[in-house]
Amino acid sequence: QKEVEQNSGPLSVPEGAIASLNCTYSDRGSQSFFWYRQYSGKSPELIMFIYSNGDKEDGRFTAQLNKASQYVSLLIRDSQPSDSATYLCAVRYVETSGSRLTFGEGTQLTVNP
Amino acid sequence: GAVVSQHPSWVICKSGTSVKIECRSLDFQATTMFWYRQFPKQSLMLMATSNEGSKATYEQGVEKDKFLINHASLTLSTLTVTSAHPEDSSFYICSARAPGPRTSLRRDTQYFGPGTRLTVL
Image (cartoon, rainbow over all chains, first blue to last red; front, side, top):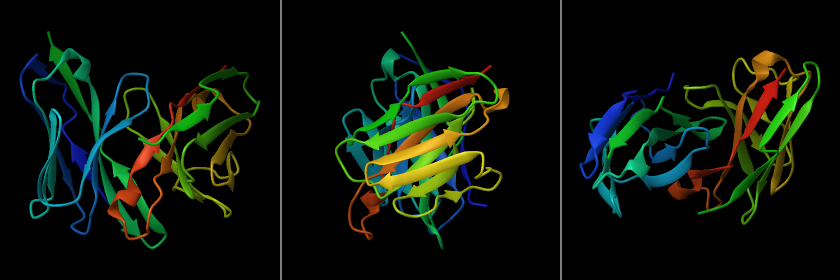
């Protein structure tokens, strides 16, 4: 069973702080990793993807990948109340029938004004 | 990013009726689409993988005769919930996989439709 684990939270940070979201995965062969944001009652929207060890920055978002530790994280700098949502980590698994994404349970983030 | 639409955005139906949900990729051709279901305060659950021109691959525990999937073109996949019951009430979301070379890692990026909220009375 391929697993993706996230802290369910809720994670609460003050406005302007850095929010750190963590994700671990079980399959060392995983190659692609994705972060999605899901507002309540809405479908997920892609924030970032990463497939190389290290950091990848996009605006206020930084994804960090450590394949040796099987760990991927998302940092949100200068957090805003509009960042309050559930953040889903997804990992690409390759199977005989093809590849697909496996999602974690999501971490609920609340940014307090 | 890529745009994926779903129709309808919400539907209320009586128990025993069938409901069809459409998923369209608007600005790219999607050979593979995915159907998810999400219950309140739970994560996404993959129901099936829909491949254009072939039969869908269903996840364990998902009844293929109840959830009929048709992917007749590169831009359209449909999910039909047959003989819907109140326990089928959920948020149904489709996604389309971005095109690209088979070896491209970015190819696995999935773009989600806005979802369809189904309520079965």
